[in-house]
Length: 293
Image (cartoon, rainbow, N blue to C red):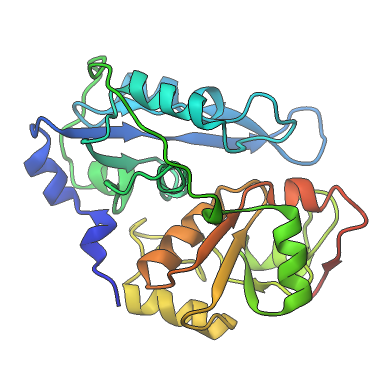
């Protein structure tokens, strides 16, 4: 079992360490809201305005849809080129020697997405604020509206391609049966009762470990990740095995990042994220999907 402190910081720890010179704290919030044109899917709304109004003192804002997604991709939130990512991190003041804490206002799945991106680009000194903004404010900890801009820094991207899975990797996993493919969406979406991404259901052969909700890896009341042993038990109950490769997916790689984070924290050491997820898979009728449990 891994050490939870390698992956998460408490609100108490962060409050006591906000003045540390190497510390870089970022609000990573994005909102998915119903589209106003009646079409399936969601509208993406940056959390920058909320951050500007009130944030953890000293925290900057990490703009996932603006700075940290591939502008050449037709899909949302896709991993950017290494050069783009490194430039954005440098602009944010996140250098190679920084100690990074990430949080958001939506169960930490957005923070987990940027954590996974940092990991995929070779940076291992980032942690999530357990409970995020919800726990910080519930405890009446200090907040600020003061603008924050860390001094620019140099970030070196060292890509780890095995942490990001492609459509071809998923097809190979289906064919081999040696990889556990994990759907991080909720049970109704997994079963195909609702279909916000087009075709209903889940990737053929995949199992369901939701990132959010009552069955999720994050406690819906506290917004904290479950105990490591409980997370591991949820993955194992779904069919994941120690030493086996896992590929997580969702609708657009966000909830899947939280599931990948949780699986890694729980000791699964061969975890990859299917970046395009159902945004790509469900749109291609040649790719196999199933409904039901």
